[in-house]
Length: 272
Image 1 (spheres, helix red, strand yellow):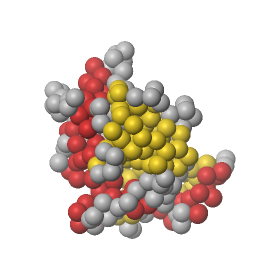
Image 2 (spheres, rainbow, N blue to C red):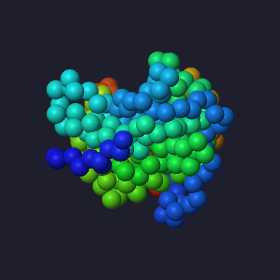
Image 3 (cartoon, rainbow, N blue to C red):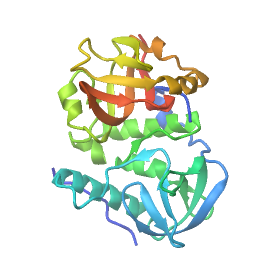
Image 4 (cartoon, helix red, strand yellow):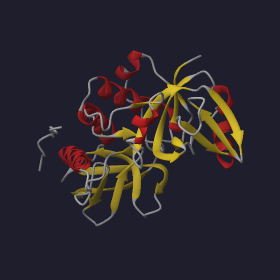
């Protein structure tokens, strides 16, 4: 596929799908206290950048393909380059404000926050990159209304096949096609399907999307994380019969699988 890239200028609960009008709703106030500000000197990839003082930071609750030129998969490299270029077009050499989203940093020491351009924080970068279709909503957004808003932006970009969503390599996967999900092995993906059953085994709760656990798609939730689901008002056992979207890193345990460690990885899109 030929990628069209823009010209470069210099905790929350499981979410129920919004109505079609939600994408037109006013942008909510997102992010907490300001944790950093400054000019962006360099963009590393579609979600990560370096401030002029040398600090590395990333967009909270956003995943994008890595810009790794050593990757043998040329399509993957092209997508990563396109996502990086899209972010550069929004933020490179711009003054940005980072507002707290969760702990404020990740395990690599990078600042993590809601990012706004301009000293008055007039443009929300997460919303901008999703609008262009060069990012996916990940877990980590602490305010449910903000996660819902961002997902409405992503959903619109998906429907119009903007950016990454125009390529089968990155488009949303369907749970009924496990072989197709396995093409995303080791990558962050969005999978949609109807939960056929919910089972518990060995300290894990499984959401099953088929009756052959050795072949079909499953979602696992560790017992240690169930408290977070309960606090968010989500009972995994109640999801049987619902159509949901799950987002996370694709693994293989018999069939394809995603581990859901946070309730905001799961979105109910159709009630049973």
